[in-house]
Image (cartoon, rainbow, N blue to C red; front, side):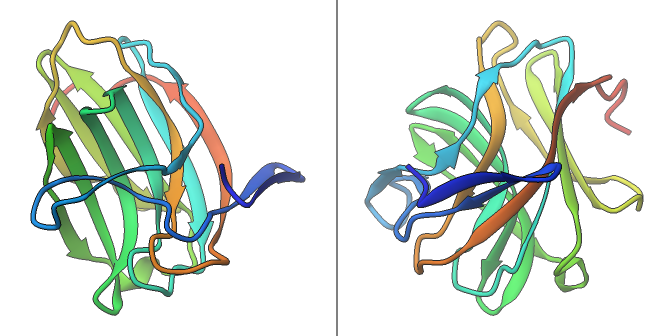
Length: 179
């Protein structure tokens, strides 16, 4: 459970509990499955988008889009503060988690949108800030017949006080092509 979740105008403000995270085994050996997420059934014919902003400034502060099949198969994608910089990335988990990131310090303090579209046996994840062009974050394997839930998530593995302001969560037309 988050510390708090309150509506303020057209935004949902979620304050993450210290120690919240989503990770399975790889490199660290532990399993954390206590992220704060609000998930609903994902219609595979639609893309799902989440828009959010926060003052990410502590190691592993994170927010974005969670896609969950079950406790051992899920994807989280969004931004995470790691090693002194804001990073755009994804964790794809199938029994074990992996992690990919790239620095986006110019995204600090701006509204970030993450979108996922299902494509046959894959999920294409894209992100952008404001109305800038979409960036491909990850093309990840994903069983075409798998039922999944999707929605916004946030975590604060190393501190208390991270509040994420979510301004949109919607189903939209999916990406037609990868390129």
